[in-house]
Length: 196
Image (cartoon, rainbow, N blue to C red; front, side, top):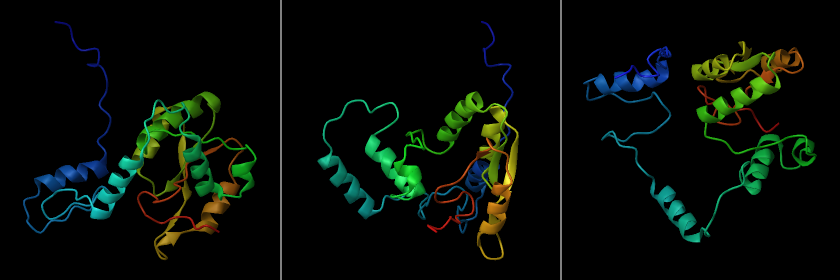
């Protein structure tokens, strides 16, 4: 029997955040609390489904019409709502056709698709991620062949966004730079940009 075609693939470094779950599982202390990945577990180690979420899912399922395939770019109503959320409902960016929004795999999957696509469009660009950021964001863009640098984001003293430092850095970037922003629920700080 021949060796696997994957035998020569070098193992990527383990994700330190996801590794916390393994360390948590190995910890025998009864008073432990899992604060690793952003999922709430109850005292029995189960992910509870809130009654309000269950009711909303049931109502949505009962009201859902039969459906076929979605358009390749995703449902237009959803994409338009996302643009409104990101840029403001009445923003010129959202209404002028200057932006394109497509539905993608959640989180990491969307970044991987985006990184590979951007490498075709702007192969010489530098990608900028927030400081701090989840390090798999860096790894995804580096694996696509981009150099990755940081822009200032979090201010520990105020426990919020250091907008002045972030804006100063972003204003200094070369045209064609790729900037990775977290639209909401900034990972890992939870500090979001305001509507202003």
